[in-house]
Image 1 (cartoon, rainbow, N blue to C red):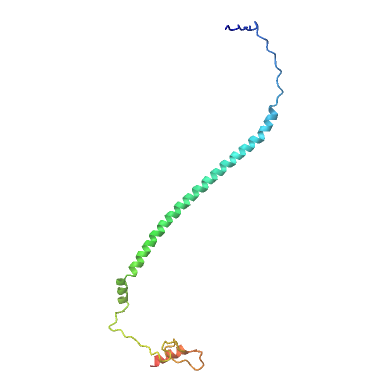
Image 2 (spheres, one colour):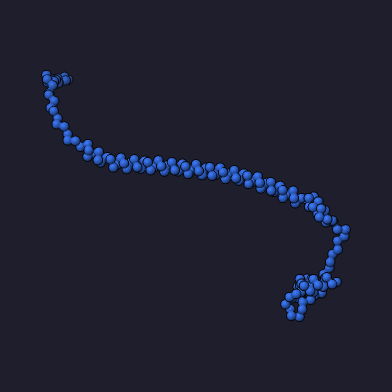
Length: 158
C-alpha cells in the first residue's frame, strides 16, 4: 500500500502588503458616561458598608467595656454582701445578745410564773364578746369605745 504523495503548498514569495485601517470613531466619552454612575454607586455602597462595619465594631467594643464594668461591680457587691452577712452573723450571735442585755440591765428571771385563763370568765380568750379587752366587760351599748381606757384606769387604781 502505497501512500499518495501530498502536494506541498508554496508560500508566496512576497508578503502581502498591509492595508491601512481607518481609525474607529471615538466612543470613549460615551462609554465613560455609562461607567461613571456605576462607579459612583459602587463607591457609595462600599463606603456605606465600611461605615456600617466600623460603627458595629464600635458598638461591640462599647458593650464589651460595659460588660467588664458590670462584672467588676458585681464582684464588689458580692464582696460587700459577704461582709454584711458576716456582720449580721456577728451581731445576732447569742453571746453578743446576752452581753447587750446585761448592759441594759436585763437579767435572767429567777422564777417563771404561768397565768391560767378561766374559759368560763368573760373575756377569757374563748371568743366572748369582750375578747381582747383584758377581761373588762363591754358596756351595754356594745360598741366598745373607751374599753381600753377603762382597762388602763382599772389597772392604775388596783
